[in-house]
Length: 436
Image 1 (cartoon, rainbow, N blue to C red):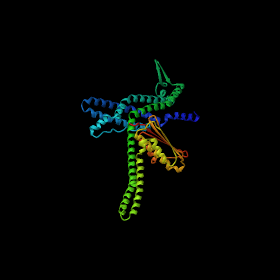
Image 2 (image 1 turned 180 degrees about the vertical axis):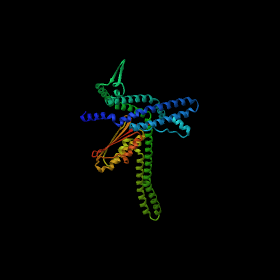
Image 3 (image 1 turned 180 degrees about the horizontal axis):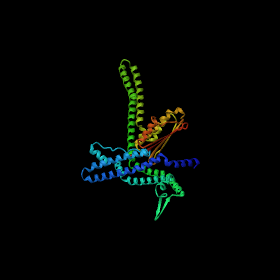
Image 4 (image 1 turned 60 degrees about the horizontal axis):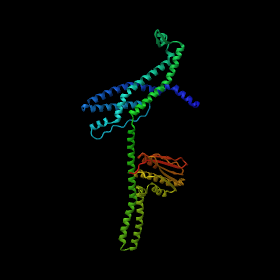
């Protein structure tokens, strides 16, 4: 540790007793006891009454009301943590009831795990609040009283018959803090307690934060549900965009070409009797248009799901994509078996779009690229690299961001490493799911 670090720690220790954070934490612990007493009293009484009334239907709404009340306590506690401890804490997921009116809402509340965790917090927090309140108050008052004792010890001989503060009594003998040595000793002890108290308060409030976040915050299940809902939205948006793209390609490409072809064949039919040579030329042109339309339909079908992927797997499909790239591409696929069709399709289209990006930037210094696919445990890994100028941006709105959203929707990972002047390396992970 250098001198700068030592000085910084020393300043932090000396400033801690008067820091705003310390005073907020002290106030948080003091307010916690009366609030916890209220929570405990209402929660225990409510649960006892509701449980006792369960022999009748009245107990059900009573218990539901207690759960709703405890969720309200949780809102107060989360607000205290955010405001006094400056800790961001997410609210738990709301209680969601299926259609069915008040009875369905009562059932959803009674089955809600987060609501019961709020009840548990209301019960178990009281003993902890008693301990933290007592510890904080004793350390705070004792430390500051002894630290400032040289300023107020004169009160005893001036206004009482005592020579100083009595601290120890043994039979008929009482020990007073009345001499210069004892006054200085009290100051030193008070200084030590005052400097140590902020760190004790920090430890107590840290435990409180863990308790609040564990019982009153958003659970991992809630986070997972929200993540899946977000991913589902991304999948729906991607599917809708793909359908619009297919519709646009059909309308602007093959469909328009087939309409023109039908018109040309109609004209050739009319000219067949009066000008056979012109009709033959028109039929020959129509034959060329048919070939072009067929090629467009093949390209469109390949964009939906290529037949080579279905028949021969990723190795052959990616080799086919690589052969159409504007730069030489080395393909290595090391898979002992094929993954599930959905995962295989996502892997194919991910590599395909990345190689399309390579082709688009072939004029920007890209001389070659590589594609590697392998399995590691329960993950399918893809790596696409090029030797271009780098600087690829994976921020929102780019094609790379769209790929990242697609992979995230299936619990995948998408990482772009593209330092300027050093090429681009894209690594993707997908969950391995074997074929049924």
